[in-house]
Image 1 (cartoon, helix red, strand yellow):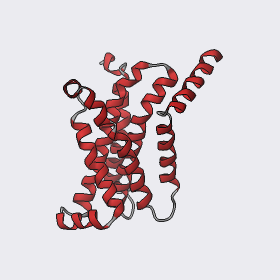
Image 2 (tube, helix red, strand yellow):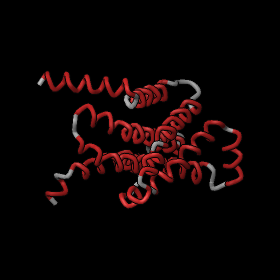
Image 3 (cartoon, one colour):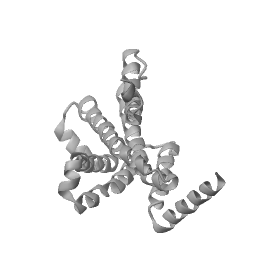
Amino acid sequence: MGAILRNPKFWLFAVCLLPLARLFVLGFTDELGANPIEFITHSTGTWTLVGLLATLSVTPLRRLTGRADLIRYRRMLGLFAFFYAMLHFMTYLWLDQFFDLAGIAKDIVKRPFITVGFAACALLIPLAATSTHAMMRRLGRRWQQLHRLVYLIASLGVIHYLWLVKKDLTQPLIFGTALILLLAMRLPWGQNALHAVRNRLVLAR
C-alpha cells in the first residue's frame, strides 16, 4: 500500500476523479441546481477541455523543466479527457435527448456548436483506442501522426464552447487563450522561448 501511495500516478488518478466525485456528492445532496442536466453537461464539458489542455501542457512543461519523466502522465490525462468527453456526450444523448436519434441527427446538422462538439467527440475515439503501448508499436510513425489530431480536437472543443455560450464569454476565451499559448509553444520560436526561460531558471539556481 505504501508503494501505491508514493506513486505520483495514483495521486494524479485520484485528482482526475475529483470532478466526477463532486457530481456524485452534489447529486446525492440535491445541489445540482435548478437544471441538473445543464449543470452536469457544463461540468463534464469543462473538465473535458481541462483534460485536453493538461495533456497538451505536458510537452511544454517537460521542455521547460527538463523532466523527461513527465511524459509518463500524458496518456492518463488524455484518457481522462476522453472519459469526461464521453460523459458529456452521454449526458446529452441520454438525459437531454432520451436517445432520440432522429432529434440528435437533426441537432448535429442544424446547430453548429453541436456539429463541432460531436466532431471533437468522434475524433477522440481513435486516439483513446490507440493509446496503448502495443498500438504505438503497431502503428509506428503513423501513431504520432494520428495523435496530432488532439490539436484539432482541442480547437473544436473551444469553438464548441464559444458557440454554446451566448452572454459571458470569459471562460471559453480563457480556454481559447490557453490553447493558443500551448500551440504556440510547439512552434520553433515558442520552443526557443521555452529553452531561453529554462536556461534562465537554471542560472538562477
